Length: 98
Image (cartoon, rainbow, N blue to C red):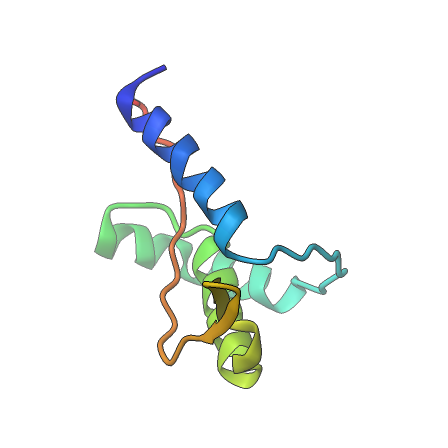
């Protein structure tokens, strides 16, 4: 295992111990997002040099949800719930060299 992967594994374990985890599944109609993405794909790729995926749309939706329901933006600190005033969104990506 590379050093990067070992650190990622360690951070994932730390996350399990510091933040309560909840899972749920919802069906979401992405038709309008798919249409918008299709219209913007070419211009976005030309301007940025990368393909437009669904991830930016999902990230914005997650941020908007945290703004609407800030009580979810919390973690445990010394057996107390700590509510965070800022939204910090991290997204893991696969790297070809890792």
